[in-house]
Length: 364
Image (cartoon, rainbow, N blue to C red; front, side):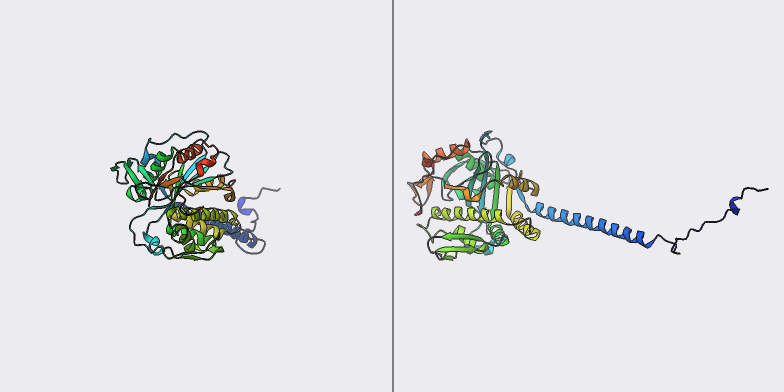
């Protein structure tokens, strides 16, 4: 007679692994550590990427134009393209102090450009506003909340130091009737660092330039300029033309086109290290309107500009004439200036008659 075995009588199954060990097979253990290592690497990479992104993102300084200016702004027309006010600040603060010999306090808008990108974004027009232009400064709000009264016959480049960047934007909007969609400012040190980061910028000059004030010393021909030389190039005025600011604008416009062309042809995707260095230099030096004050916003805006070829960008100086009271200053020439701003405001072709300036500064 047979009977069922009790649990205590059941034969015990060995729990030992086939290899005689008491743990998981080595192959499983190896793959587990490989998988864990992969996860660690991914997380570390993500953390590094996030740190790099946060670092660049935190570099950018923003100005809330809508808050600072309020509703006293030109209407944004549906077919007016994009308009960006670009300022080069000559502040001597911080790292900028060693880049210029002048013993000058405060900061001014050393370079001012209204960049107009028509609908379709395949071309662009850059209008330079001479720093010595006499304008009417509108009533503005200062950074401390106080109100600064309107003033006539104010030199354009002084507005930045008197009231701040938002007032410069408001002034440009008032004299042009053109709504500025964005504001971008770069300082001395940032400009030098950007040029050095991209490996220099190549320019050609048709005459010798020797300016003891800026330190620029170039012979006629083609030169690749480093950051310091580039800063001297865009700031020189005594080595060309009649030594006025109007002559300097020609060099600034030439350099801007060369700089944008150099940036566009850089193989940024092929060199992540170089890309980061350029982005770090650029974002550290930038102050923008609040809508552009993030890495994502700047990147999106930059990608939207990919169709614009710097070589085809038109550069124009705001038509000006010498002031009748002070020949060392200029004022907007009419009716040329009105025609120019109207064409930009309505996204229309700029008539040739609107590009001619009675005051040439000794240059063509």
